[in-house]
Length: 177
Image (cartoon, rainbow, N blue to C red):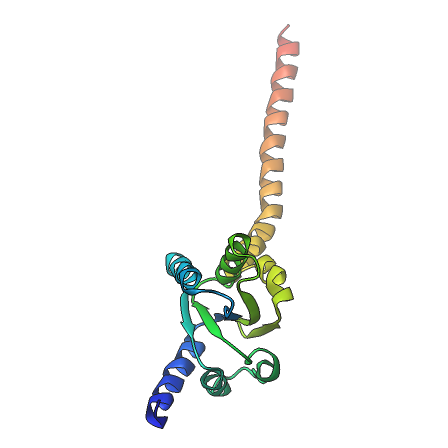
């Protein structure tokens, strides 16, 4: 690969990292061709772009980002590296890795991930990544919490009005009798 070709790949990768808020760096070196094809098929089905890229190219592309990814240099960017990109949700790739590991024990390892510029290093972070909530989920919860007191007041007023109408009706029936 010539310097120009590497430069083009680094530029493309830097642009991809800049517009993709969720990416995972994995080690799938223990997979044979059939299992690698299974992994790629799963990625395609779930809307994840999976690419095997040289560590030096990943490192140079990450250096061009606003976030400091130097903690990836000594731990994550060693050995075989495949990058999973997803533009909408940070948990999709983590769920894919977990599901793939159920059927293929010790086949793929999470080396590192970036979720909205937050850095996660090591395979032990997989469960943490699965429990993270997306921005949409957090916004939904906040809206629900903000609406809850108003709903309680409205339902209290509505039920109070019905009780008052019932009491008045009972009193008027007593007076008539």
